[in-house]
Amino acid sequence: MIPSSRRFNFPLPASSVTISQQISESANQRISESANQRIGESASQRIGESANQRVSESASQRISESANQRISESANQRISESASQRISESANQRIGGPTDSVKHPRPRRQTGPRITHPASSFQLPASSPQHPASDPPWEPGYRHLHCSGELAERARVALAALARCALCPRGCGVDRLNGGRGACGVGADPVIASWNVHPWEEPPISGTRGSGTIFFSGCTGKCRFCQNYPISQFGYGNRVSIERFAEMMLELQGRGCHNINFVTPTHFAPQILAAVDVAAAQGLHIPLVYNTSGYETIPALRRLEGVVDIWLPDAKYADDATARRISGFAGYVAHNRAALREIYRQVGDALILDAAGIAHRGMIIRHLVLPEGLAGTAEVLRWIAQTLSPRVHVSLMDQYFPAYKVLDDPALGRKIRPEEYAAALDAFEAAGLENGWMQEYDETCGLDQV
Ligand code: SF4
Image (cartoon, rainbow, N blue to C red; front, side, top):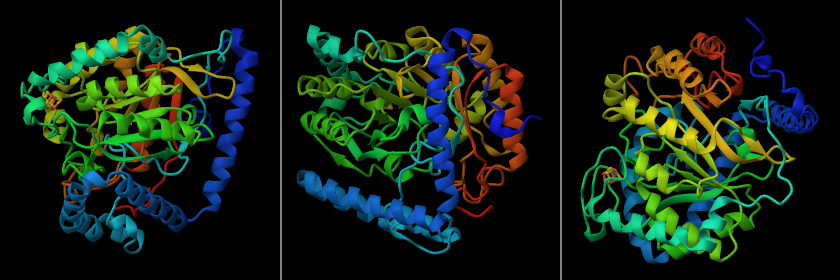
């Protein structure tokens, strides 16, 4: 077994050595700084920062979304009375006492980690950054589509299709334009739970200035372990106009974010097209990241072709029955694999980085390792390597912790064990994958081992 710090550090192609070395040095420096910082920080510091950030987010949201204040108050009340109580009584108690996060838990990536990776827990840069942004200066694809009018037309068609919604594989067929609600629980207006600078995605996404995450309420999935359940399942968030949604992107760009990162976006894809068109007219020019569960339809993905610059799809499961039982996804494996093939068709296996190591285009597949092998990790990784390409970048995550409905679940009611993550890393190598990131195994992940 090779040391974990070397696991994904594969040799670079000779043709890209010079550029890659520069990028690698830069990335490693950041990782080193980040690791040192992590060592120096205590868990309570991280929690404190997170809580302050959340308070700030919450306050600014309330100010900017006064029209929806009543909705927000109602949602907050529900969260305070139900979700937060469970968090308080379980996970957060283990942190060592309640914090502000009890009332407004920082949303986490839905895979689990839709949002929050433990601070800077990703290690090691991709082994093969491809080439820098260059000559002529790189420009995201949506800008061309905006200028030609195609983006507006795609948005128009996509929004009209909400009259009989089949955006995701659930195919509810409800009229979301006239009050109908399907399994995702949302209608025609975007509902946004938070938007902020996020420093803890994979290094090419968060870079040095953070990723501009926008978290949508509702979800096409029903993950029993969802760490963002107040948002995804209880609908916490504010209804906003397309214009306000566009302003959020511009605000994040103004704060220096490397990209706009749409988190759990599937059920709002038409609204995203419309808002990006508005924002592009006002100067939006940074890459768009599509951070999805991977439960997608091909038509929906094709409508996003050339609009999304960086795809962050999950590959959650290798078994349909498990996917249905734990996450409520019907036919997940077939839909997920078809989606991954389509994304691969659009962007291939090259992750295009600029000279500073920040991603401009490509795909990173995320896989969250679950206890008891429930995610089918080895099979998922083998499929990616054999069906797509061994050069596809894979982010292998260890940050699962029990939340929502699985606190007392015999299998899912605990974090993964070190040996389970080690087995996942072995599976990565056995599959022949060449690029990716591991997470530094954090036994607590902010929580004590159950
Ligand atoms: S996006 Fe929502 S309403 Fe539309 S098909 Fe999916 S779950 Fe149903």
